[in-house]
Length: 499
Image 1 (cartoon, rainbow, N blue to C red):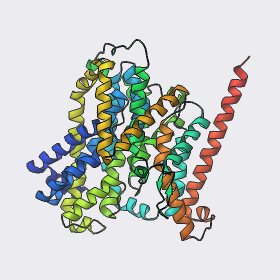
Image 2: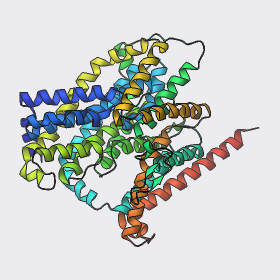
Image 3: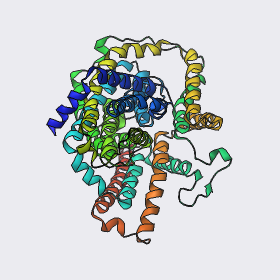
Image 4: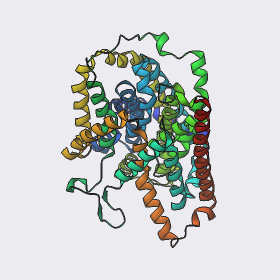
């Protein structure tokens, strides 16, 4: 494997290929900063360019855009509470409070370095464990995916900083919103009040509204309107202290491990990995009460997870020909347009392409780190702009990003409606993040549960008779017991301290 990886390095280090790798990651980062645009839009626009490049170079270019956008997505999340990509939604929970407390530079540095380490772990997993992880992924069927999604939904109720019952209610709301549109099995329309909703509610509209527009409304409602506080952007404020760096080691290790696992499973992706990493980190933390207030481990874990997942997401794409998300489907399309069919034979028939792409992750992550660190001061300077001057620019960016996603005016109007909803939710202490995870995972649970019932004749015991599914079932039960025990312990503690 190491010999093959060296072969890939010899491919990517060629000057012309290296230029395209740099261009890909740099463009990906810029695209990630723009709210609502995302890697899928950039890859769609650049797909015709790949006709004039060889297959290896075009794949390195498109892959660079994909994982570069994961880096860029954290910038807008930290500075403006605008998740540039779905996987950077969790970054808002800790990154934005850090920016509000004059620690934006530190947050950007931790996000960039955590992303780098997570990406490197993902590359190592690709090099050393691509084949074993492919074998494991092949053993996951509909029952296993259904149980995996249930664990994700249970974890979503632990994301919020307040009551877990409120968080669970938000998960249910997200699932309900995810049901809007045509039924994937029967084709019947569900909760479709207008023809424009036949394809369902856009994830971009929901995310931009709940996080971006709601934040604009929240700041605009304050009187008098104030400018940003004076900022210090010296390197001493950017680099974490030794104690802070020590506290990030295990969160990054856990986040990278979770991201590597979820990225290798077809149909999961970086968004689910980042949510799971945040929820698990909150449970492992000795100071869970600090989550949601600008806690660095809560920022490092999801950032390392989504970048590790973006690297290992190429395992099912290249070795099985199974896309993990819409971006991976586009990359498979680019391969097919170049006359290459992804699958188990790709590693043997096209070793330079396969290992060249993997080696480009290693080089691209180094390039991104070198780009990000010097630009931290420049990004932080955005916060010097008075809020009242930022509002029109933020709203314009949101509207352009949402409209470009599906070229729908209805999506823009829905974004504004979700912004009002998000503002009301925050006023009444309901967390918006669980809504996003319920929205993403709800349809996945429905599809896999239905498929299980169809394949096994409605036999519910299949969830506990298949080994992997049974293990996941036990894990879900443990999560439920853990949550109940935590609630009871908290109530006892409150009862003891109250007069």
